[in-house]
View (cartoon, protein in one colour):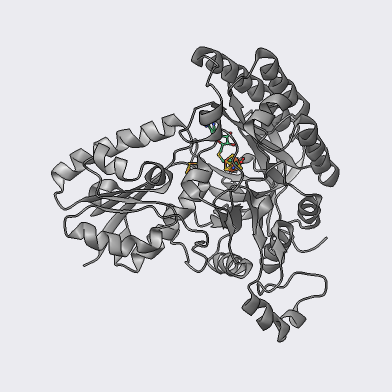
Length: 478
Ligand code: SAH
Ligand code: SF4
Ligand code: F3S
């Protein structure tokens, strides 16, 4: 009999994609995904540790599992992801309802662990790996709109930003074989997907070094079929992130390509040049700044200062005047003064971000900041600074969005607008949401269609447009 699994994902896009890898591993073990915890034999919570609040949300959700278990005695509950890695056996101690704890590098062992759980025992595997990339596993797309998909290109992080728990929960950085990335993108295209987002904590440090045997294979002739001056698609030559972007752009020329996340200290002009060269690479960069103060950035161990960040911004604008930029900002990091905070606000005004994710600093166990610095900005001050950052960003977003009015954009339709069944929503290359009438150019718009749109009006959160024509994305090299 088919067993039913319900997977709930918290945290970043990489977790969402990991859940799809887990669904794929479990499919071979006889599990089909279902849409609610109530109908499942196995509930898996794929969790996030990035801030205390994120963990609190999951701990509350775990408590709710007691009610489900009361109704379904055979139900098993597992915790995956970053909280599993961080809390390990403690989770089993704290929450009796949990049967299974599995860290982000141990998903291949799920079938064995579940077998153990099936006999009434608890099971834990939180071993981190230096090699695991789940490279050849084809993810089972969950909650999909059939149009956009995530493709993880690397795992872990070696950066040790002082505030960040990720290096502890995700382990050392490692890159996935470019050949398997290209194959996954081709497969998605064949299945009708129109947009991929390449994922990594710091995509700019993507680095594939062929093994000795792979280069030997290349020497026997595979390399010679590649166009001159372009990296091979066989994984037999060293590949950096710019090379990878170009490989994917050429392999699936009709597909839109996005990526996340860039790191200001590592973002190269080579990447920007590739982005500028290919129409199917979206003109959007998420470039987290964290703070506008060089003193704070130094304590954060980010590896750049304010001047360096602004120079990177200028380079983006030189390469792609129409590129949208978003960011992450932390308010109230250790030792942040009122003057530091003002520097963050002034940097925001200077850059004029399209969008920002904004957070109050939350101390995480084991991190450099937790060990070295006092969490000394009072909570109410953190809150006030965060609110000022949010208020300013609202104005800046509105300003950026208003700038699009009157322009023509290509929009990839993703689905029916939540507000009106007579409207569809999609995104332009700059990642802004665009709302258009459902019927246009004599046709009904469907998810996956590209439409040429004139932007007619804007709010801080979305654009409204009028369809000029339905068309395929014009792609290939400039
Ligand atoms: N790899 C990405 C960030 C991943 S975490 C990068 O380097 O940019 C996403 C965001 O969460 C971070 O950019 C940061 O703004 C925020 N964040 C991380 N740790 C945090 C903490 N301890 N408190 C508050 N915000 C945090
Ligand atoms: Fe965390 Fe820094 Fe790595 Fe991003 S780059 S995941 S913020 S340690
Ligand atoms: Fe959270 Fe882990 Fe992602 S801590 S943000 S789920 S890498």
